[in-house]
Length: 528
Image (cartoon, rainbow, N blue to C red; front, side, top):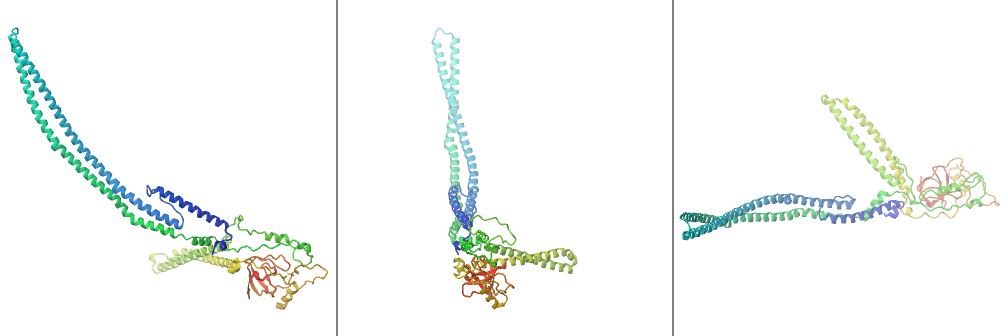
């Protein structure tokens, strides 16, 4: 099956479908572009939806994004959270070690300052003692100096010497203490602090290396599933079946209508050559109903025009035959399921009623009567609906088959009508009378002086309707514009009144009662 054959009247559907295909292609291009941008952050906004293979592809991408979310969660908990907590602990420990080192440095600096102070004091006292000694010696040699001044100067020099000696002892003690503290600082205290810092840094490096391992471990854990996702994407890409998509489109939108036949030539010149007669088909003044025939032939046949809005009906007759059949089949299946459900419920209620009757303490059997009656009512209603839908479905299937016809005849153009004129009314009446003696001809043969029409007029006034000898279906549309012929629509059921006598014409009767000749090649005949 192909679109040109099955979807000949679905121009708008094909227009929408091909546009949808291009939109889907553009959407996929946009998706891949966005996917490339999102790849840097992984799985943030990677949630989409589309049809069939694209849906499967997006599902795999969704699973892929889920795995990236697992990686992000694992890294967030096992790496980011734990390492951030460990980093805070390391910072506190480092702060404590450096505070301890700074306190030791401060103590050593304070000891050095005290040493410098005692040193300067010792230096100052020594100079004062030396100065006091020079002063006492000068006064002692001065003949003008009094004894009291000399004694006082000597006492002052002795006091200064004593102070210098005390400063010396204090400076020596301070120096000894500083040297001891300095040795402890450089050889014991600071090395211990640095060792602790080294241990802390080595533990930090080890933990950081473990964090690096967690990163790769988190990736390795999802690699198998990500591989399956990527394989699923490949399978989704390979599962795109263009032929199947075309078949699906056909099944969804196939109308079941046959293509329109060729338009018939409307011979308006017959008015000029036609001689009015009392038995002529047409208006009372002898002119055929050309305007009515023209209006019928102008019925909308072109599928590309704007379609009128249709009112939905219960039997879905507003839909094309194929779509009507599918919808009726769905409704019938749904009613059958509901009917089976109601019957099962009825059986269950009957069993429950039997149990209540045998064991009254479990319940009152009369309480189930309303529900049983309601179930029976539903069953009857559903059975009627099933019968109704079955009848509609049979009619729709018959309509589809009638429209379908033979596979070769359906897609070929209608054959040309016979070149010979259809039998005249007198011959047809004679043939009919020989069969059932119920028809008679009331038409006088035309005089030789009159202009004889192309086809003799067909007499529709039968005293008694003849019985059909079979049934037939119109394979093609035929516009009976000539005398003795009758119009018929494609797929129309007709009654066979007279078989083809070898001239290519068959006499049929329409359901409306109109009777006349049509081309035999336009019919599918079934004899009684």
